[in-house]
Image 1 (cartoon, rainbow, N blue to C red):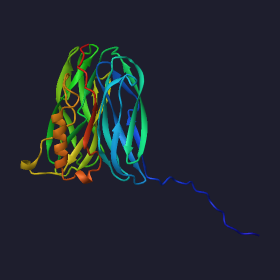
Image 2 (image 1 turned 45 degrees about the vertical axis):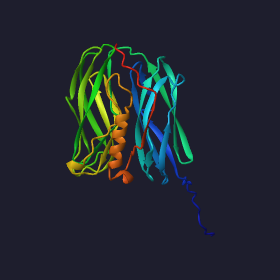
Image 3 (image 1 turned 180 degrees about the horizontal axis):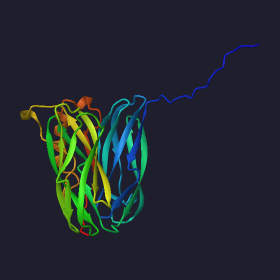
Image 4 (image 1 turned 90 degrees about the horizontal axis):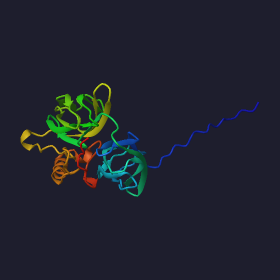
Length: 292
């Protein structure tokens, strides 16, 4: 008998540092005259790290008039960062493609997001969140936001929120009121409250806000950034990255300045475990809300 060894071939795993880009939802439908959003996630592979730069050119070929997002985020080894991509449509309905280009150092990747710009065809509603909320441990902030009636919708819309990651003492997102009454062609204002405790882990969270009237449901996403506790006398004002209202610029310089100032003041800026906004990129202005 001849004895020998049997060699087993193992798959070779890629070990080159790199990153991926994804969107949730992967396909976006934008009501004509209003807005929509998707959450971008940049994920490190094999210890890749660096500063993320994003580009999302808009124009007639994309069907979009504006694209707002954060850039200058720091991707940590084997981690991920998120940014909310907020889209405003042009004037022509149709199916389009929006190309997102993410660059870190000398490496870049493209992501094509199918975009459908469609007229409002029946009763519906929508809301627009701030792209991100920044706060500190043991603090509560309140932000005014709106639910907007589309296509003659009237009725009650209930709001609820889920925060991820689901960990002990994660931020709590709630609403006052948590049910709003809409009349046809109008907006209803509500207050979003983001609350933390002293033991809330610092870092970044994704909040998914559900708006439903029982028949129609929509989910919207945003970033919640939590920094180290400070005594009340040292706490900066919260910095949020978009404006609300139906005729305001998509981003105001004051809000950007406030957000950057707040982020720079956080003691955890260099060790943040997610999104770290250094600059805010906005292409063109948000159009004035059209009544339906």
